[in-house]
Amino acid sequence: MNTIKVENLTKTFVSKTGKPFRKKKGELRAVDVVSFTIPKGEIFSLLGPNGAGKTTTIKILATLLIPSGGSASVMGHDVVKQDFAVRKVLTAVLPGERTLYWKLSVKENLLYFASLYGMSQREAMPVIKQLLADFELEDKENSLVEKLSTGQRQKAVLCRALLPGPEVILLDEPTLGLDPVSAKNLRAIIKRIQEKGTTILLTTHYMFEADELSDRVAIIDAGKIVCLDTPQNLKKNLNVKKIFRLETNRWTDKISESISLSHGIQSSRFYRKNGHYSVELEVAQRDLSLSGLSTFCSNNDISIHQVSIDEPTLEDVFVEKTGKTISEAEDTHEAPVLA
Image (cartoon, rainbow, N blue to C red; front, side, top):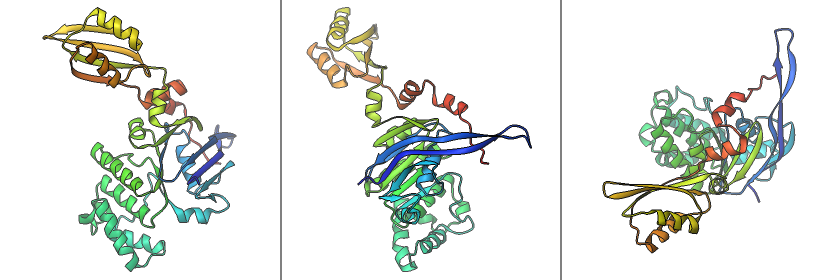
């Protein structure tokens, strides 16, 4: 059974435009016939610009919004008809929300929220101790939340979300606003959460983050999913070039001709500098691997001193599928104004 199942999900907002007292009502479709499934234990990312429909989708799954059409279920429970059952198996972490009380300590917050989940203090304390250890917050358990750094506060929010042992966790832009070190630490924590069997749906507009964390990625733009696959497959199927840069002990025009014929090199350049050769090879994404290049060089008595590869990114995927960069896409999206 799929942990999350979304079929033809649609959410339409009524937006207001025009002058005061002369406002025209229009429709803004934030989520436009979206479908996907997520099996147990997978990290699935909705990747797209601000305004693409990521947060709206998360809020529907979290039973915070009612869809305009289609259906969605979590652990077999319909998010509209069985919303209470859905809330018992998932937790959601949304950006910009004060999900902790800043005038209470970390431990006081966790004990309070544990009581809301129906846990006694005796049941909650071992869980809290373990979570604080997992998130390296043991020395902060008696600190007021308002005294924590942004990264520490986000860790505490995740502790709160994991208190009831949810089977599913929804993370909306989890590293937004964090410094690079804190964001890196949080991504490592997300991977550790997955290792315990938790299914994770996260949204992000950071291409590298989706690439690093996700088992599968759905790129979403203007409310529509434009492609869905593993990060590796999305990049592999691109119609873009891969560039190998080598430093070798030797290279000649004849070698360039030979590798072009045998491995489909589209263009090659080389020059000699300081006793070695700098070589640049452009190749279609699927035509040459590093192991294939190493084998060719070995068979031709060429020693590779150094090699680097410029490979396609999910940013390239987004551009190919939408015709614009993610920043350009953000400029074209309209935020809904609710009637």
